[in-house]
Image (cartoon, rainbow, N blue to C red; front, side, top):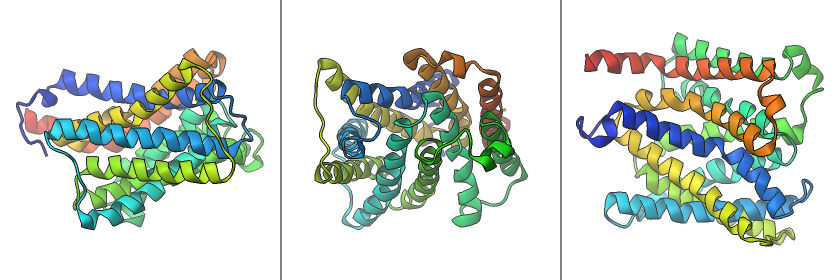
Length: 320
């Protein structure tokens, strides 16, 4: 719940603008990574170097997250001794598992396709929270919202028949992104459980760094490397680190001062930004503006809104 109803962070325009900014950051991840592959000259088959790049990004993101969080908290953010096990477990799902597949996928599929299928994590998370972790009760609206979102993703890839035949999809491309969404959903439920024992900013920051370090070391051991050919390489890496650090920190601030649903319902902007930014920066406009893409985005966005609508409505009634 909110700590201060009159806080700057509770004003509706601030909530909307900051939430959209976070979604722009998250949405820019797909094009930023694909651009990084070009800047660092990492081939689609060079898995070790992809791991090194991912590791460098998240070690940097971890440092940034703790730094920003410490400024906001006005004290150094240091985890409790008992929280180390939560950080380790969370890093396995949120960084190592999720971004191993995320980086693999974007080396083998378009940014538009990756952004749309990655949105499935928004629907897997509530299903896992309800049926696997028993964190929430079964809700008709949430089930309808999840079904609506998945319908949009399925239609984008040509319907159920296309999914069965596998024609438009590959395991290393769309399949890997679906795996990344699976790990995202698990990590979302995990952080909800672990945040009862530790500051979620501390959990996110330290797990970013730990998971990044593991990916970086594994990549180096497998023969990967990261060569900085231009200033753009440094700027790209810094920006990719800021994507995670900035978005997670600001989103966490919004959740601190506002009801969860008031913030989460704005998550529908995320896949939209992913598709639009991929179209703009990667030249994927034709795919982004196709009928299938537009219909998929509408259904996915509607699904996210429906999943989070119930509590948001209650919040408005309480305000009234």
